[in-house]
Amino acid sequence: MNSATTASRYSSTAIGLHWVLALAIIGSFSFGLYMTDLPVSPQRLRYYNYHKWAGACILALSALRLLWRLTHRPPADLPMPAWQQRAAHATHQLLYVLFFAVPLVGWAYSSAAGYPVVVFGVLPLPDFVPVDKDLAALIKPFHKYLAFTMAALVLVHVAGALKHHFLDRDGLLARMWPAGPRKDFA
Amino acid sequence: MKTYFVASALALLAAWAGPACAQKLIPAQSEISFTSKQMGAPMEGKFKKFDAQIGFDPKKPEAGSIAFSIDLSSVQIGDADTLAELAKPGWFDSKRMPQATFQSSGIKAAGPGKFDIAGKLNIKGNARDVTVPVTLTQTAGTTLATGGFVIKRLEFKIGEGDWADTSMVANDVQVKFKLALTGVGAL
Image 1 (cartoon, each protein chain N blue to C red):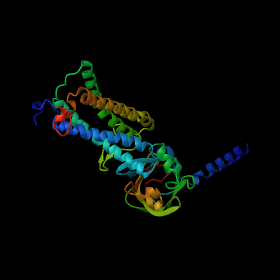
Image 2 (image 1 turned 180 degrees about the vertical axis):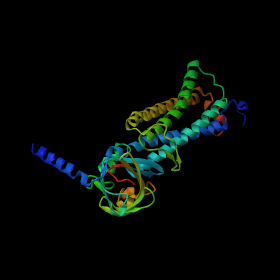
Image 3 (image 1 turned 90 degrees about the vertical axis):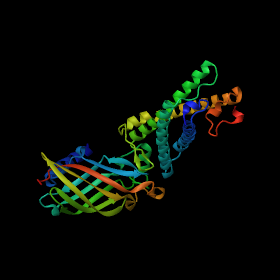
Protein backbone atom coordinates (compact mmCIF):
# COMPACT_ATOMS: atom_id res chain seq x y z
CA MET A 1 0.00 0.00 0.00
CA ASN A 2 2.71 2.49 -0.86
CA SER A 3 1.28 5.28 -2.96
CA ALA A 4 4.66 6.19 -4.46
CA THR A 5 4.94 2.82 -6.21
CA THR A 6 1.48 2.98 -7.80
CA ALA A 7 1.99 6.27 -9.55
CA SER A 8 -0.32 5.43 -12.44
CA ARG A 9 -3.32 5.06 -10.12
CA TYR A 10 -4.77 6.75 -7.05
CA SER A 11 -4.39 4.70 -3.86
CA SER A 12 -7.28 2.43 -2.91
CA THR A 13 -8.10 4.68 0.03
CA ALA A 14 -8.26 7.75 -2.21
CA ILE A 15 -10.43 5.85 -4.70
CA GLY A 16 -12.73 4.59 -1.94
CA LEU A 17 -13.13 8.04 -0.40
CA HIS A 18 -13.71 9.59 -3.84
CA TRP A 19 -16.61 7.31 -4.70
CA VAL A 20 -18.19 7.14 -1.26
CA LEU A 21 -18.12 10.94 -1.06
CA ALA A 22 -19.34 11.29 -4.65
CA LEU A 23 -22.41 9.22 -3.79
CA ALA A 24 -22.93 10.96 -0.44
CA ILE A 25 -22.60 14.45 -1.91
CA ILE A 26 -24.82 13.83 -4.94
CA GLY A 27 -27.33 12.11 -2.68
CA SER A 28 -27.39 14.90 -0.08
CA PHE A 29 -27.61 17.58 -2.75
CA SER A 30 -30.60 15.92 -4.47
CA PHE A 31 -32.22 15.17 -1.14
CA GLY A 32 -31.71 18.79 -0.08
CA LEU A 33 -33.44 20.03 -3.22
CA TYR A 34 -36.34 17.68 -2.61
CA MET A 35 -36.90 18.23 1.10
CA THR A 36 -36.89 22.04 1.08
CA ASP A 37 -40.04 22.06 -1.09
CA LEU A 38 -42.02 19.78 1.23
CA PRO A 39 -44.73 21.25 3.47
CA VAL A 40 -43.97 21.32 7.21
CA SER A 41 -44.54 17.79 8.51
CA PRO A 42 -42.80 15.19 10.68
CA GLN A 43 -41.50 13.62 7.49
CA ARG A 44 -39.85 16.87 6.41
CA LEU A 45 -38.29 17.31 9.84
CA ARG A 46 -36.98 13.75 9.66
CA TYR A 47 -35.47 14.41 6.23
CA TYR A 48 -33.82 17.60 7.47
CA ASN A 49 -32.20 15.62 10.25
CA TYR A 50 -31.03 12.92 7.81
CA HIS A 51 -29.61 15.66 5.60
CA LYS A 52 -27.73 17.18 8.54
CA TRP A 53 -26.38 13.81 9.59
CA ALA A 54 -25.22 13.16 6.04
CA GLY A 55 -23.59 16.59 5.98
CA ALA A 56 -21.71 15.86 9.21
CA CYS A 57 -20.48 12.55 7.75
CA ILE A 58 -19.41 14.29 4.54
CA LEU A 59 -17.51 16.87 6.58
CA ALA A 60 -15.71 14.20 8.62
CA LEU A 61 -14.88 12.06 5.59
CA SER A 62 -13.68 15.14 3.71
CA ALA A 63 -11.30 15.95 6.56
CA LEU A 64 -9.97 12.41 6.34
CA ARG A 65 -9.73 12.72 2.58
CA LEU A 66 -7.85 16.03 2.74
CA LEU A 67 -5.38 14.52 5.23
CA TRP A 68 -4.88 11.55 2.93
CA ARG A 69 -4.46 13.78 -0.10
CA LEU A 70 -1.87 15.95 1.67
CA THR A 71 0.16 12.95 2.75
CA HIS A 72 -0.11 10.86 -0.44
CA ARG A 73 1.06 11.99 -3.82
CA PRO A 74 -1.57 11.50 -6.53
CA PRO A 75 -0.54 10.08 -9.94
CA ALA A 76 1.20 12.58 -12.22
CA ASP A 77 -0.90 14.51 -14.73
CA LEU A 78 -1.46 12.85 -18.09
CA PRO A 79 -0.17 14.78 -21.07
CA MET A 80 -2.60 17.61 -21.86
CA PRO A 81 -2.49 21.31 -22.74
CA ALA A 82 -1.34 23.53 -19.87
CA TRP A 83 -4.65 25.38 -19.64
CA GLN A 84 -6.48 22.11 -19.16
CA GLN A 85 -4.06 21.14 -16.42
CA ARG A 86 -4.60 24.45 -14.69
CA ALA A 87 -8.38 24.16 -15.09
CA ALA A 88 -8.37 20.62 -13.69
CA HIS A 89 -6.25 21.60 -10.69
CA ALA A 90 -8.35 24.71 -10.00
CA THR A 91 -11.56 22.62 -10.17
CA HIS A 92 -10.12 20.08 -7.74
CA GLN A 93 -8.98 22.77 -5.33
CA LEU A 94 -12.31 24.57 -5.41
CA LEU A 95 -14.14 21.27 -4.90
CA TYR A 96 -12.02 20.58 -1.83
CA VAL A 97 -12.86 24.04 -0.46
CA LEU A 98 -16.56 23.37 -1.03
CA PHE A 99 -16.44 19.89 0.58
CA PHE A 100 -15.87 21.87 3.78
CA ALA A 101 -17.69 25.12 3.08
CA VAL A 102 -21.08 23.62 2.16
CA PRO A 103 -21.55 21.46 5.28
CA LEU A 104 -19.96 24.06 7.58
CA VAL A 105 -22.30 26.79 6.35
CA GLY A 106 -25.27 24.39 6.66
CA TRP A 107 -24.22 23.58 10.21
CA ALA A 108 -23.83 27.30 11.00
CA TYR A 109 -27.30 28.00 9.62
CA SER A 110 -28.84 25.21 11.66
CA SER A 111 -27.18 26.48 14.84
CA ALA A 112 -28.12 30.11 14.20
CA ALA A 113 -31.73 29.12 13.51
CA GLY A 114 -31.91 27.40 16.90
CA TYR A 115 -31.73 23.81 15.67
CA PRO A 116 -28.55 22.31 17.10
CA VAL A 117 -27.20 19.38 15.08
CA VAL A 118 -27.12 16.04 16.91
CA VAL A 119 -25.59 13.46 14.59
CA PHE A 120 -27.65 10.25 14.50
CA GLY A 121 -29.60 11.69 17.44
CA VAL A 122 -26.72 10.92 19.81
CA LEU A 123 -23.67 13.02 18.96
CA PRO A 124 -24.28 16.72 19.60
CA LEU A 125 -22.17 19.08 17.49
CA PRO A 126 -21.17 22.32 19.17
CA ASP A 127 -22.80 25.55 18.01
CA PHE A 128 -19.99 27.69 16.63
CA VAL A 129 -22.36 30.58 15.93
CA PRO A 130 -24.95 32.02 18.36
CA VAL A 131 -28.70 31.46 18.03
CA ASP A 132 -29.67 34.59 16.12
CA LYS A 133 -32.61 34.94 13.75
CA ASP A 134 -31.01 37.66 11.62
CA LEU A 135 -27.75 35.77 11.37
CA ALA A 136 -29.67 32.64 10.33
CA ALA A 137 -31.48 34.56 7.59
CA LEU A 138 -28.13 35.96 6.42
CA ILE A 139 -26.43 32.55 6.31
CA LYS A 140 -29.31 30.54 4.82
CA PRO A 141 -28.95 31.45 1.12
CA PHE A 142 -25.19 30.80 1.16
CA HIS A 143 -25.65 27.11 1.90
CA LYS A 144 -27.68 26.93 -1.29
CA TYR A 145 -25.37 29.13 -3.40
CA LEU A 146 -22.32 27.13 -2.34
CA ALA A 147 -24.10 23.82 -2.95
CA PHE A 148 -25.12 24.94 -6.45
CA THR A 149 -21.56 26.11 -7.12
CA MET A 150 -20.34 22.68 -6.07
CA ALA A 151 -22.94 21.01 -8.31
CA ALA A 152 -21.73 23.10 -11.26
CA LEU A 153 -18.09 22.17 -10.52
CA VAL A 154 -19.04 18.49 -10.24
CA LEU A 155 -20.56 18.75 -13.73
CA VAL A 156 -17.33 20.35 -15.01
CA HIS A 157 -15.32 17.63 -13.27
CA VAL A 158 -17.45 14.83 -14.76
CA ALA A 159 -17.42 16.47 -18.21
CA GLY A 160 -13.62 16.69 -18.06
CA ALA A 161 -13.29 13.04 -17.05
CA LEU A 162 -15.63 11.91 -19.83
CA LYS A 163 -13.75 14.05 -22.35
CA HIS A 164 -10.52 12.30 -21.38
CA HIS A 165 -12.16 8.92 -21.57
CA PHE A 166 -14.16 9.21 -24.79
CA LEU A 167 -12.32 11.88 -26.83
CA ASP A 168 -8.69 11.75 -25.69
CA ARG A 169 -8.87 8.02 -24.86
CA ASP A 170 -5.95 8.50 -22.50
CA GLY A 171 -7.06 6.08 -19.77
CA LEU A 172 -7.53 8.84 -17.18
CA LEU A 173 -10.67 7.24 -15.75
CA ALA A 174 -8.78 4.03 -14.91
CA ARG A 175 -6.73 5.94 -12.34
CA MET A 176 -9.83 6.52 -10.22
CA TRP A 177 -11.89 3.49 -11.25
CA PRO A 178 -12.62 1.22 -8.28
CA ALA A 179 -12.32 -2.09 -10.14
CA GLY A 180 -8.65 -1.62 -10.99
CA PRO A 181 -6.98 -1.03 -14.36
CA ARG A 182 -9.06 -2.48 -17.15
CA LYS A 183 -7.99 -3.19 -20.69
CA ASP A 184 -10.66 -1.03 -22.31
CA PHE A 185 -9.40 2.02 -20.42
CA ALA A 186 -5.82 1.60 -21.47
CA MET B 1 -62.42 60.29 25.26
CA LYS B 2 -64.72 57.81 26.93
CA THR B 3 -62.12 55.09 26.57
CA TYR B 4 -59.59 57.42 28.10
CA PHE B 5 -61.79 57.93 31.17
CA VAL B 6 -62.40 54.24 31.56
CA ALA B 7 -58.69 53.58 31.24
CA SER B 8 -57.86 56.25 33.80
CA ALA B 9 -60.47 54.91 36.18
CA LEU B 10 -59.07 51.42 35.78
CA ALA B 11 -55.54 52.70 36.32
CA LEU B 12 -56.60 54.44 39.50
CA LEU B 13 -58.40 51.36 40.66
CA ALA B 14 -55.34 49.24 39.94
CA ALA B 15 -53.10 51.69 41.82
CA TRP B 16 -55.48 51.62 44.75
CA ALA B 17 -55.82 47.84 44.71
CA GLY B 18 -52.06 47.50 44.30
CA PRO B 19 -50.93 47.24 47.90
CA ALA B 20 -53.57 44.57 48.60
CA CYS B 21 -51.86 42.03 46.31
CA ALA B 22 -48.39 42.82 47.54
CA GLN B 23 -46.29 40.62 45.26
CA LYS B 24 -45.66 41.58 41.67
CA LEU B 25 -43.90 39.95 38.79
CA ILE B 26 -41.22 41.95 36.97
CA PRO B 27 -41.67 40.60 33.43
CA ALA B 28 -38.53 42.25 32.03
CA GLN B 29 -36.33 40.32 34.46
CA SER B 30 -38.26 37.08 34.18
CA GLU B 31 -37.93 34.20 31.76
CA ILE B 32 -39.90 31.12 30.86
CA SER B 33 -38.28 28.69 28.50
CA PHE B 34 -38.74 25.11 27.41
CA THR B 35 -36.67 22.50 25.64
CA SER B 36 -38.13 19.99 23.25
CA LYS B 37 -36.07 17.27 21.61
CA GLN B 38 -36.46 16.40 17.95
CA MET B 39 -34.65 13.24 16.94
CA GLY B 40 -32.30 13.90 19.85
CA ALA B 41 -31.66 17.53 18.94
CA PRO B 42 -32.71 19.95 21.69
CA MET B 43 -34.64 23.03 20.61
CA GLU B 44 -35.15 25.84 23.06
CA GLY B 45 -38.20 28.06 23.01
CA LYS B 46 -39.26 31.03 25.11
CA PHE B 47 -42.52 32.72 26.03
CA LYS B 48 -42.39 36.50 25.93
CA LYS B 49 -45.75 37.25 27.56
CA PHE B 50 -46.86 35.86 30.87
CA ASP B 51 -48.35 37.11 34.09
CA ALA B 52 -48.78 36.00 37.66
CA GLN B 53 -51.00 36.75 40.63
CA ILE B 54 -49.05 35.90 43.71
CA GLY B 55 -50.08 35.93 47.32
CA PHE B 56 -47.23 34.28 49.12
CA ASP B 57 -45.40 34.67 52.38
CA PRO B 58 -42.33 32.44 52.78
CA LYS B 59 -43.10 32.27 56.51
CA LYS B 60 -46.56 30.84 55.84
CA PRO B 61 -46.23 28.92 52.57
CA GLU B 62 -49.37 26.82 53.19
CA ALA B 63 -51.54 29.94 53.09
CA GLY B 64 -50.09 31.08 49.78
CA SER B 65 -51.70 31.02 46.38
CA ILE B 66 -50.15 31.41 42.95
CA ALA B 67 -51.92 31.82 39.65
CA PHE B 68 -49.95 31.98 36.47
CA SER B 69 -50.85 32.52 32.86
CA ILE B 70 -48.79 32.30 29.70
CA ASP B 71 -49.75 33.79 26.37
CA LEU B 72 -49.06 30.84 24.04
CA SER B 73 -48.94 33.03 20.95
CA SER B 74 -45.94 34.85 22.43
CA VAL B 75 -43.76 31.78 21.87
CA GLN B 76 -40.39 32.25 20.22
CA ILE B 77 -38.71 29.23 18.71
CA GLY B 78 -36.95 28.25 15.51
CA ASP B 79 -37.92 29.92 12.25
CA ALA B 80 -41.17 31.35 10.86
CA ASP B 81 -42.30 27.92 9.56
CA THR B 82 -41.99 26.44 13.04
CA LEU B 83 -43.93 29.33 14.60
CA ALA B 84 -46.72 29.04 12.03
CA GLU B 85 -46.89 25.30 12.68
CA LEU B 86 -46.99 25.76 16.47
CA ALA B 87 -50.01 28.07 16.28
CA LYS B 88 -52.07 25.37 14.51
CA PRO B 89 -54.83 23.41 16.28
CA GLY B 90 -52.66 20.28 16.47
CA TRP B 91 -50.09 22.15 18.54
CA PHE B 92 -50.89 25.15 20.76
CA ASP B 93 -54.12 26.10 19.01
CA SER B 94 -53.26 29.58 20.24
CA LYS B 95 -56.11 31.33 18.36
CA ARG B 96 -58.77 29.31 20.14
CA MET B 97 -56.97 28.75 23.45
CA PRO B 98 -54.52 31.63 23.82
CA GLN B 99 -53.65 31.05 27.47
CA ALA B 100 -51.95 28.29 29.38
CA THR B 101 -52.69 28.60 33.08
CA PHE B 102 -51.44 27.29 36.37
CA GLN B 103 -53.38 27.52 39.62
CA SER B 104 -51.73 26.36 42.80
CA SER B 105 -53.64 24.11 45.18
CA GLY B 106 -51.03 23.69 47.89
CA ILE B 107 -47.60 25.06 48.74
CA LYS B 108 -45.21 23.22 51.02
CA ALA B 109 -41.79 24.16 52.37
CA ALA B 110 -39.12 21.78 51.13
CA GLY B 111 -35.96 23.06 52.77
CA PRO B 112 -34.31 26.45 53.17
CA GLY B 113 -35.60 28.72 50.40
CA LYS B 114 -37.23 25.75 48.66
CA PHE B 115 -40.90 25.13 48.11
CA ASP B 116 -43.01 22.57 46.32
CA ILE B 117 -45.98 24.11 44.61
CA ALA B 118 -48.70 21.67 43.67
CA GLY B 119 -51.41 22.75 41.30
CA LYS B 120 -53.21 22.34 38.04
CA LEU B 121 -51.58 23.13 34.75
CA ASN B 122 -54.06 23.74 31.97
CA ILE B 123 -53.00 23.86 28.34
CA LYS B 124 -55.49 23.68 25.47
CA GLY B 125 -58.25 22.75 27.90
CA ASN B 126 -56.30 19.75 29.19
CA ALA B 127 -55.67 20.00 32.91
CA ARG B 128 -53.06 17.95 34.74
CA ASP B 129 -51.78 17.97 38.30
CA VAL B 130 -48.17 19.02 38.51
CA THR B 131 -45.79 19.74 41.34
CA VAL B 132 -43.31 22.48 40.67
CA PRO B 133 -40.19 22.77 42.81
CA VAL B 134 -39.18 26.39 43.31
CA THR B 135 -36.05 27.88 44.82
CA LEU B 136 -36.17 31.43 46.13
CA THR B 137 -33.20 33.72 46.43
CA GLN B 138 -33.45 37.31 47.61
CA THR B 139 -31.41 40.39 46.82
CA ALA B 140 -32.28 44.00 47.66
CA GLY B 141 -36.05 43.82 47.51
CA THR B 142 -36.19 41.41 44.59
CA THR B 143 -36.98 37.76 45.00
CA LEU B 144 -35.85 35.41 42.29
CA ALA B 145 -37.91 32.24 41.91
CA THR B 146 -36.25 29.58 39.79
CA GLY B 147 -37.22 26.06 38.97
CA GLY B 148 -38.12 23.59 36.32
CA PHE B 149 -40.29 20.60 35.68
CA VAL B 150 -40.98 18.11 32.94
CA ILE B 151 -44.33 17.74 31.23
CA LYS B 152 -45.50 15.10 28.80
CA ARG B 153 -46.62 17.05 25.77
CA LEU B 154 -49.11 14.38 24.65
CA GLU B 155 -51.02 14.70 27.95
CA PHE B 156 -51.84 18.21 26.85
CA LYS B 157 -52.43 17.24 23.22
CA ILE B 158 -49.49 19.33 22.07
CA GLY B 159 -48.51 17.90 18.71
CA GLU B 160 -51.38 15.72 17.57
CA GLY B 161 -51.91 13.49 14.56
CA ASP B 162 -48.70 12.75 12.66
CA TRP B 163 -46.77 14.79 15.22
CA ALA B 164 -47.78 12.46 18.07
CA ASP B 165 -44.87 10.24 17.00
CA THR B 166 -42.47 10.56 19.95
CA SER B 167 -39.54 9.11 17.98
CA MET B 168 -39.71 12.38 16.06
CA VAL B 169 -40.59 14.88 18.80
CA ALA B 170 -39.95 13.58 22.31
CA ASN B 171 -42.89 13.38 24.72
CA ASP B 172 -40.90 14.98 27.54
CA VAL B 173 -40.66 18.75 27.46
CA GLN B 174 -38.41 20.41 30.01
CA VAL B 175 -39.88 23.68 31.27
CA LYS B 176 -37.64 26.16 33.06
CA PHE B 177 -38.43 29.46 34.67
CA LYS B 178 -36.76 32.38 36.36
CA LEU B 179 -39.22 34.84 37.83
CA ALA B 180 -38.29 38.13 39.42
CA LEU B 181 -40.77 39.26 42.07
CA THR B 182 -41.12 42.29 44.26
CA GLY B 183 -42.86 42.51 47.59
CA VAL B 184 -42.17 38.97 48.80
CA GLY B 185 -41.55 38.79 52.54
CA ALA B 186 -38.12 37.81 53.85
CA LEU B 187 -37.23 34.14 53.78
